[in-house]
Length: 209
Image 1: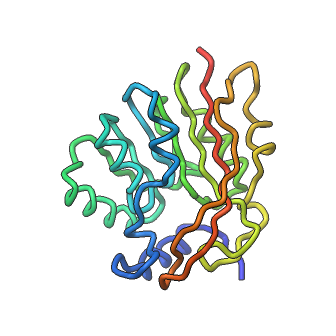
Image 2: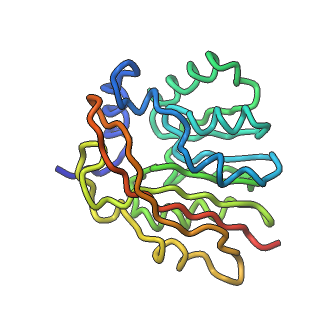
């Protein structure tokens, strides 16, 4: 089956996701590319677009960033807030329940990042939309799935996967410097503790001043 990735889908997804299950998204560690791709950046304001259970937002807050963490699912945000409290990272994170296909942040950020977020719009259009929220001199970090298989146990619509060429093509060379454009395969634990292989696309770009 395929999914529309609307609010009802994500609410149901998070209501059925339990943090004590192996491979649950509610208990996942921060994305492994985050530390590598932000290591040389001075902490500032950041937006985690589609923050889910908050692993990346909490990691960034622990490294000095002021976070706006947005997600369409109230259940995901509740889990994220609990996780932030447990880790002692609450003052630097603002949790926002928002449909990122329509929401406007009202500001630009030094860092806009998204990790495996799937909105109810074509994936490439979503990446282009959030790129507009990066301040001059700021960084856009996209980590996405290349859905050549079943990943976490779901089959995804074609609109949910894009290639490196797709992403870099929408970042106008006059406005952006592409710093990282890579594909990686890595092992991970899927739902139920089953081993899966993830095919990731990682793009980091700097908006020209």
